[in-house]
Image 1 (cartoon, rainbow, N blue to C red):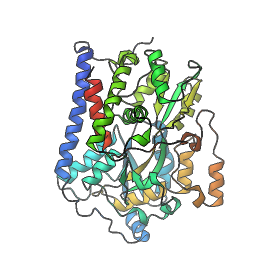
Image 2: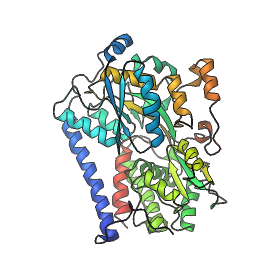
Image 3: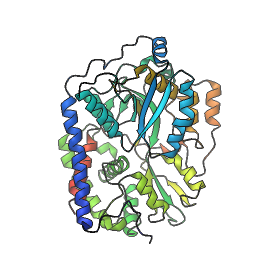
Image 4: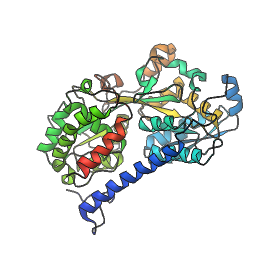
Length: 431
């Protein structure tokens, strides 16, 4: 087996137990910092939390010459290139300059907004747009961090289905015009068919396979986004399906359902990579293990990148999407506009351009980024529908219709931190 990558190795004096304790401490510190910031800002929404524009013409006029800072995860090379080389020039043609601000975690952007609001900076903030969803959206909305009632002004919102549940609710939180849809996603398991000739077709089967092949499977440590959704997938599985897990969070359901989840993950831990003594910090590190052939499965919310990773030799040629009988979790991601953004009108223009048929098509092309569109094809012009139909077929990644078959709904955002904390105390620290 190859030596572990440098970003997994811990300083020798601490040892495994010290490393695990340090990781747990970091998770507590992050959660505590966010809670303190939220607590300070969660009073009434700041002035300006509702859009003051009454027409799109006014928005476009006010946006001229503005520079919009888009804070987004910077670890996706294809996503970075799309924003810099495709979206930014299209936005520039509308009189707005788009600057991408790479971050390691969406919480970094949210914490900046909350900190500025706490300090009384209710306008001219340093964050103009944030790529986000889930718990970060809910936390910010409860704190009055997002501008609301602005997306209905966007002409291109008419290209989305008004009753699409993935777009009207974000992890159970009503969107209510406080963020603009950008992409759809489907959680996906991936395996090396050159090693696994007879892959499992259920999540229970995946865990059983991992126990039968010690060291060849792992998952990122929550609260990493991918690690968190993996725990929710296992929760659905041990509960007999998502129908048995109430979407809205309540402590009684958590107390009843999660013991089986944490017991199963604790049982699984000794069979994981490095005996479960440490976990990848995020999906990037998990994928590096897969690329180095140290594990035989990986998982992602962005399967479109698989095509390029196989073609350039980063991933094994046998890389294949695993289709699960019970389906997987699906959701959508959005562009949130902070209530104190310095370039509000420009940010609205960026979000509208990003929602155009031309940009959604470019973003959906696997040669560009391969993100699934949020547009309703039935609402598109015939030429745009034809262009989507003509997108190149990937021999690695099935279509969204195939990936989203039997899709499972997301739980309400309040489940996420509760499950993350429970994993830390019951699985990471409980062994």
